[in-house]
Structure formats: structure tokens, C-alpha cells
Length: 236
Image (cartoon, rainbow, N blue to C red):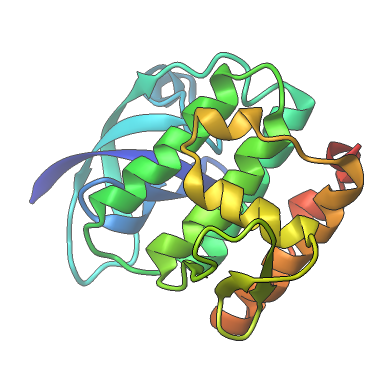
């Protein structure tokens, strides 16, 4: 049966001499793996030229429920990324986001809200010129909502808050905790306004360390993203 869906490319690997295997998070079918036979031939590359990580594409494929690899027959670009696949910081952050997504989301089922969340993050990263790290921080906080452990703010508007890693609850506190305060701000702001949040340089590492520890409590086998490990400059 032939099917068609939009999707975002998470990972690609060369298979044998001339084929390509790609993992795509699709709008209609969740996480799917595909094979593009003869991808590296001149004829095929004219038909399929968009299978780089972060690409937002449409694929037509032959679906067989019993197969782990679906065969792509056609593909086309849905959104033309400006520089997210070439700008060093954007590329590093984008690859970190899709690595975390790939390692965390395994469901082969429709979840349009999650798909559009991921797509909006990549497009915002592509279109932005400043405060790129804020988009990643926003992703870290808001991704938890789709995974089922979004923090709960029980601070009742208190000026100062603390964050409990075990329960995921924000409560009122007697002194400022910069990380907890940032978590609350990224919970309250949307993707556009989050780039206006003031983040002290010294707080970025502590914030990410805290969120990764939080993920580790709720996601079995959670690993520190390798793509972020080799690009510490984003914290500067």
C-alpha cells in the first residue's frame, strides 16, 4: 500500500554501496525507518536530495507492516532550511535536539502534537540569529510535556522557587535559585518570547545539568547527547 507523509529526518546511514537508510519522525506514522535504494546513483539523487538530518520533507513510500524498513518511492522538500544544516552552532544544537529525540521517542504511532513541536523547534532555530541556546533550553523544558513528566508549578506565584528533581515540582523558597527560576520562566514563555529571557552565562551549564538529571530519572537509559559533548562552546 502506498502512503504519503511529511516528516523530519533524524538520522541517515549509508547501506552497502549504493543505498541509504534513514530514520524519520513522521507526522502521520510516528517514528519510521526507510530505505532509499540506489540513493547514491546520479539518477536517484535527482529524485532524492533532501535526506540530511534536520531536513523537513515529504515522502511517498510502500508500507508493509511486517517490514522494519519501508521503501521510499518519491520525496520532496517541504521547508527549505536557510542555514541550520551549515551554521556551526545551529547545526550542533539541531543535531543535539534530534539525537535526544531519537534516543527517547520510540513510538510508531501518530502524534501530530509532538511532530509539530519538533518541527517548530527546528524552524525557529533556523530562522533565529541570536540567543540560539535559548531555543535548546526551551526544548529541554517543553519536551518533557510530550514525554509525560512536565514540571508542576506549585509556587503560587512566589518570588523565589526551588525545584525537586524527584517529584518535578516547583515550590516557593526563601532565596533565589537561578536554575529553578529559569525552569519556571521557560514553562511560562512560548517559543518566540523565550529568546527574551535573561540567562546568566554561569547558569547555562547548571540548568542543562539539572534538566539532564531530571530526564535521567524518568527516561530509561537516558544518555548525555554526544553531539553536545563535543561542542561546549555553545555555553559561552
